[in-house]
Image (cartoon, one colour):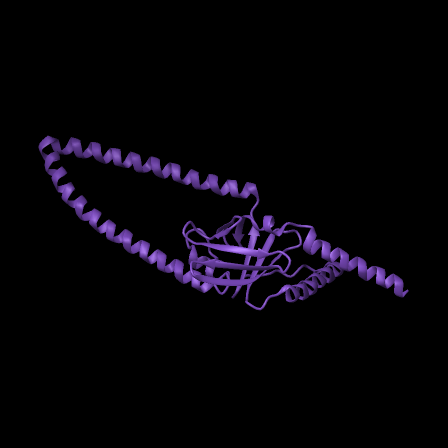
Length: 244
């Protein structure tokens, strides 16, 4: 009886160890297009960076044995732990400096036991929700990523055509209504106005860039600590509603 129990325990330990450390390549599984849970915002992770937007990207490094992650944004640094769902379709990153090989192992044993218990009892699995210090990312399929890219291109095309048509019609109307002399006067006036507009645009662009840079730094500082779901939307309001 004791020997049989020992065999069962050894088999369970072996199966858990294989699934945790040998079955998957975490570095490869990390990479790809992810969607911030509950939003339409897309986060792209490559082999070196977690790209929240075109301007905000965290350098990162994982320890697949300890299941921990460290990351940096400029001079700011943070760390935490990560966990994939059983089907590898979801990635959860939890911030914190106290995670180690042993602590994540104990946590994951309890997590696996809860999942197994719910499965045996026919209960739904507990949903992990983003929150303070917790980032939840859902993996995007290749088809979903391609559909989003096609949708963006489709929106850009009509907008460009409409802009070109509007500009051409305005130019024809101005030439027909004014004549050569008035066109010259209008050209002079437009040149002066254009100079004023350019000056204002330059100021606005500079101010916008400064504001965007300040927002990026603030979001990075809020996330480092570690990336949290509450920081993702601040870092990328246009493309993502959650941040790392």
